[in-house]
Length: 394
Image 1 (cartoon, helix red, strand yellow):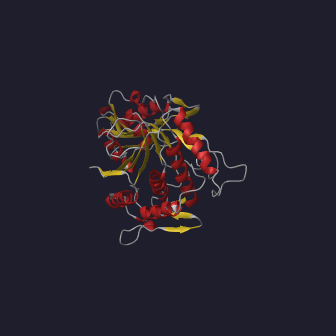
Image 2 (image 1 turned 180 degrees about the horizontal axis):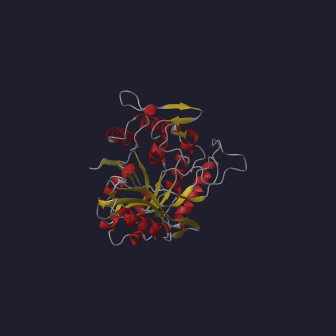
Image 3 (image 1 turned 90 degrees about the vertical axis):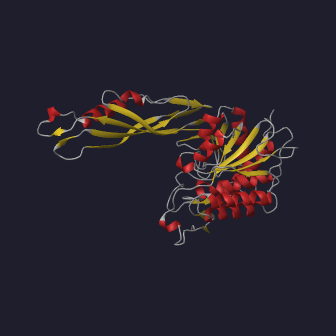
């Protein structure tokens, strides 16, 4: 791989990132998908498609004419992102509905800059520019819609047959092992949101024995949740600890009425291979309902995880990287993330070995002044390009 970026690559990454951030995609993702599809068709030799779910998909193949869907069952490496965002803060949107976007102090500001249009631009440009080794996998690119509402686009694509062998998902992994360092997440927790619904019988509060107090039943369920064992998992030597917590309770209709219904909300952070037995808190008069279940992720392919880590370390050694320090560049590490991404769906439903690696720093996504470091976006471009150019099937 060359020591320097291809001519104008940094400008391309930054221009595409800015254009994506400026394009609204919280209520309707069509315009952002259109932009990305046009860019891929106009600047790459890849086979590009837009599926029925609004996902943007493309493929390249070493030494072969690209097709999408790929024409053979040869192994595939995927660069994965999403182009939807959460609703903008008032200060992040103009009166006409367009997004406010700006650059200052080396950072790109605007809704979606961190989560994850900065990294999405880096993924797209690296997909275009990577020199694919003859003994390497096919390279695909996927930008999904609906990630922020439970991974709708990713799940639909998997149902349609999207199943890469390996994937680099460009969600944030910067700042875990050290400030500004872009690490490689080999696992993350999932999230299961559920509700315990306690049923009772209403009565006048002056004669409580004539009713059945749903709040009391809910209280017993809360105690059961509090006493649950939470699972742990180990992924490539890293420990993940699950959690479970009651996060809300609502019941009763008036101060003088024995409540006939009470709902308890439960937030559970799951780990690969195991989860808390929340259902045990249900019982007589108490039902358990799962509202959302986002799967955890684990990469079990140590060779792939190490290849991405080597690319991350090489990217930090680039002469233009502002964090480089002569003979002592920052040293990225394998880390774990606390929250779910589309990597969980790929691991759970498609059998993919994914890692998460991207420009966003911890705590930056979904904020009123969301931003991303442009130098880190440049670094991610180099990182992604190196992964595609060096990872082989051997």
